[in-house]
Image (cartoon, rainbow, N blue to C red):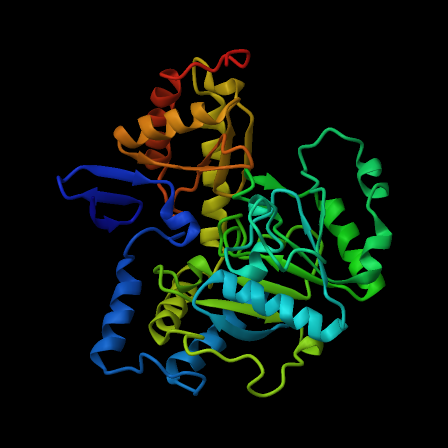
Amino acid sequence: MFQSGKGGWLKDVNGKNYLDCFLGSGALNYGHNDAELIKSLQEYISSDGVVQGLDMATTSKQKFLKDFHEIILVPRQLEYRVQLAGPGGANAVEAAIRLARKITGRTRVIYFENSYHGMTEGARSVSDMIKDQVNSCRSDNLCLPFRCESESEDRGSRLSNMPEHEFESAAAVIIETVQIEGGVRVADKEWLQEIQRLCNLYGVLLIIDDIQAGIGRSGSFFSFESSGICPDLVILSKSLSGLGLPLSIVLIKPQYDVWDACEYTGTFRGLNYAFVTASAAMDKFWRDGELENAVNVGSVFLFGALKNMQPVAYTLPIRRKGLVFGLEFPRQEQAVCVQQKAFSDGLLVGICGKNKNVIKIMPSLLSSSGELTHAVETLRNAIGSVSLNRASN
């Protein structure tokens, strides 16, 4: 049972330390209990700052919106309006889908194999990872193949195989540029650009789900920044508050901001405490490029360390984007055994992928080289205890 957390570490009730490379499945990109973020919240609470303001204007909400515009959007030459969608990422997915259907008058949403967008009914209807579950919203939606940058298939063939006619009747395309729950599968850039072209051609809204891959996890603030696309709607949540507090938003291109007054409402559309810590996080980590540079340096370091693991780990496929890594094992039970052994040795990692055979490594974006080395050494020992014979049953 965990009792406390600081930085990239958790401590249980017996005083044992664990390096956390799971981090609330991406809700704590900056680690646990950053001192400056905690201080900003404590000062706000001690001043009797508003906790719950419904849709009314508050000073913390105003500051969050101003900071997001100045620190995040302006330097990237992006123009979006911000919709506060609710406490969780699935709320924002629902809002984005509903808005796309309102704008286009169509209902079909195109999604992709191995996708995951949340557990509410509408989010499940575009999540291939849980398609075996009964879902009354799914009938009109369409699942298409996802193209990874690592696939050996001829690139021209990838683009020519795109079913262009399916876009004519679609309201939206929703996509993760990095399918983290799907096994850390990174989308091919030219394929993303082709999707953008088809969306523009047929008046389909392109929705990027950056709930888990965004807020620096992929290296840049948005996972799509280096892909050459500019989505119509962007969904953010998880690490947006910086401290694990619930907050989700939809970024909307101005021409698509067509909500009527009170058309999309909800009590918990923005916790003021989350606005405070989100502003503090943006101010601390995103006013310059230091964090982005550190993430990319850490990514290269961790990739090299994982490749050089001996005696067997180098045989495992490694997928990565920024500081999210996937180690693919031949079978699910092997990944589970490695996860359990690592946990007993003081390392938290997740499991993902359609077959639940991929170890997901998501260290703090602020990890030191010593912490990353510790993670690799612990994984090395865990993997060494598991047979990787692909032919065995």
